Image (tube, rainbow, N blue to C red; front, side):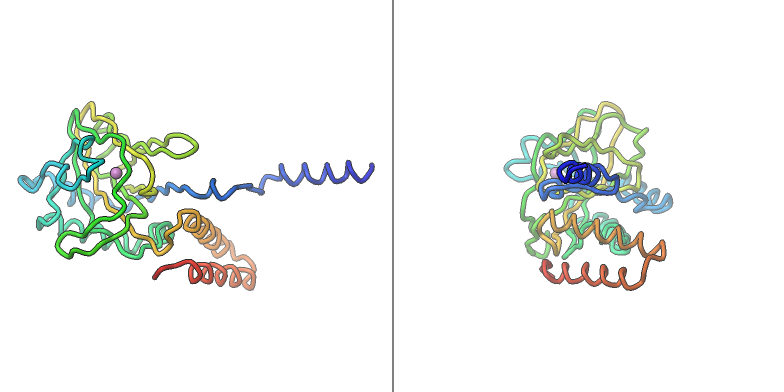
Length: 258
Ligand code: NI
């Protein structure tokens, strides 16, 4: 075997080795994260009962839509300053603040007060990108929207249509989760909610300004944290684990706006 064929064999083996993932920075620049069971069945029942009896607090969803969103938005939402929005928003905030997967995926600097929306038959939200800056009602505080979050509150068997469709450079992702489950996706993405053809879809939604503004950096940190958790659970070498944990924190220190 000559040198060339050795090299070739070696290179081929490296590239096809099953543990090797080859990515470019572009591949890493987009992340959808499914966070299951944010609400348990009792919490879900409580939230749904209160929303279903919110009466006049439900208003036309266009009240918070911007120039791009208003013409394509056709849904209802709970008035942001209503007592019911505060009460249920606080409940959701208390749960996500303790959710390790949410914290790891978002590295939140703050969280926009959660809002609630409803799509009945024939309603939809056409193609749009979420507004980049939102002003928190009541406080006047500005927040950059790095991440969009949808928490599904209706069982998928109770409605048809109403899929959250998110576009990226690889195509379209269609998301319809169990009630109580949440999806985290880049606010910079083009997305839509398809028309409801049966039933009603209720959801909670909000935005997150992240300490890590760059989506690619945030994705790297999320994957690194997941790998560290697996090493912790499998009792991997202590010194190597400590080094990786240190590297994780030092990368956060390098990149974060705290
Ligand atoms: Ni949106």
